[in-house]
Amino acid sequence: MSTLTATIPGTNVSTSRRDQKARSMNRSKPLWSVLAWIVGVLFVLPVLWMVLTSLHSEPDAATNPPSIAAALTLDGYRSFFSAQPAAPLINSAMASIVSTLLVLCLAIPAAFALSIRPVQKWTDVMFFFLSTKFMPLVAGLLPLYLFATKTGTLDNIWLLIVLYTSMNLPIAVWMMQSFLAEVPGEMLEAASIDGAGLIRMLWSIVRPVAMPGVAATALICFIFSWNELLLARTLTNTVASTAPVFLTGFVTSQGLFLAQLCAAATVISLPVLVAGFAAQDKLVQGLSMGAVK
Amino acid sequence: MSASTASSHSKVGPDRPQVHAGSARKAADWARRAPLLPALIFTIVVTQLPFVATIVISFMNWNSYYPQDRGFGGVSNYVSVFTNAQLRSAVVNTVILTVTVVLVSLVLGMLIALLLDRKFAGRGAVRTMMIAPFLVVPIAAALLWKHALFNPNYGLLNGTLNAIWKLFGSDSAPQVDWLSTAPKIAIEVSLVWQWTPFMMLILLAGLQSKPADAEEAARMDGATSFQIFRYLTFPHLRQYLELGGLLGAIYIVQNFDAVFTITAGGLGTANLPYTIYQTVFSAHDYGLASAMGVVVVIATIVVATFALRVVSSMFKQEAGR
Image 1: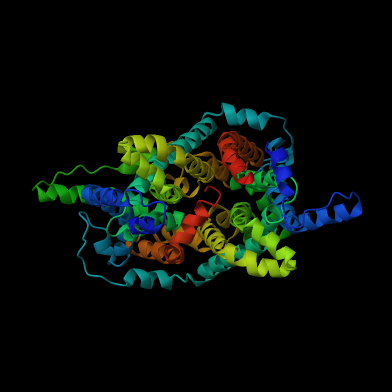
Image 2: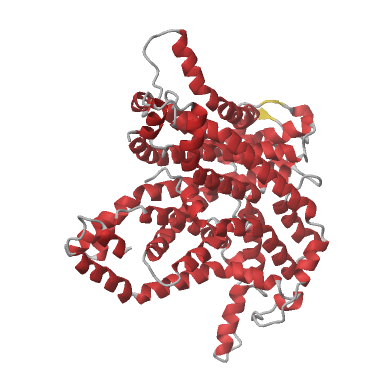
């Protein structure tokens, strides 16, 4: 980083001194680095504890003081998978993936109309979308439940898909708008002067700039859908129940088996953990919505 | 609010419509609106219609146990929301929970983001560890805290106390029943653990977008670290803090998973979402639950309007680019 600034012409005024100073600053505070590591470990510790407990036998999982060095076993996972989690996991995957795709299909054209060729009063439209998020899900829950019972869509995964789409769409429109606003207007103008059609412009200019934004938006929609509990719990029953609902049932129906519970929690969190770790930078971009620069 | 600046801005575009009035212009306007309409119509139908129904039901006496008593009830449900002690405490709990969790996780998130903004060995690894709590499914996190950490007999917290005391040859480590001693704090701790990484990520993005030269210049001029933070870093972070606060508040006001799992609303911890859930699915009092829903929405709008005023200022900057 510091070598990089040194190579930019015009910034090399007393670069060497700054360099020295910057380096000595970074070096002289190992205390802060140690503190950062401690904080990081503290935050990840419950997650590690969940994974470790899931790998212990039930008696070893529930001891005081904790038995860190106890023998590892896959029994917890065996009993979790013998509880037939396939259907809820598939339901969750379907609800999350299909609703995320639907969100993208709706949000990308909308964001286009709000940034590349903005409609009049586009900021008002943006605020309308955000304001729908001010309505807590629970405030629409009863009518949705009554609607579902009347129309026979209770316990139907498609109802959840529609609702998850509506739940994530406003945030997705916001995110996509800010990502598309990154497309330089001069480039579009230049392309249209050169006679490029709309499709061509979208493909060769907008698409490359927007792709990271699409990925970030998709990731966040996926996470929120995968995690959702309240709607899934109230609007599904046996057929369409999702992984989080399955997890709650896991405790009450069988009493408490800690290792088994931790195994279940680990498996159900795994898709989000893997996706989130793999796409950390996208996640950061998405969360800051590109809106604030 | 920023409509006038926005509409003048909105005409900047590759194919700005010429000012010949008439049908061509109208057609062009509709061509612009067309891509927006599916999302707009979908959102209105799926999110606004149910809420309109909620408002209607909130003025009705409607308990599905007593179907014959269904009818117009005036504002009686709203009177209950504010006079029934249990419901009032749900309102208070929601406010306390939201404010505490948002503020604490914002402050912690900011401190940790400042720590992670400097270069050190394994920075990527520490960031990865920090993100983990945000990626654990909330219901799994709630179950984890309740059973694996807070449990008085074999939870990690008491287990650690025991292990430390044993190190010093004592068998009488304090063994606290965390959930009954401090139920609200227990819920707040688990939520702060989940939301601090979220705030940290937003603020870290903010810190990393900060121009480095201003800080270097200030340092050359002899500014202390605190002065740099106070006059350069913090003002730059402000809009990120506000964005984090707004998003955090929107999601934490609605929190259901943690309250439902960790205390099941017991020990005076029930918040509005949990109480509404109970009122619909246990008490079957649809009218009352709807009135509570309307109150939550109004409260959220009040909070969010304050927050939005600030977000909209940052939004104006962008619009004026």
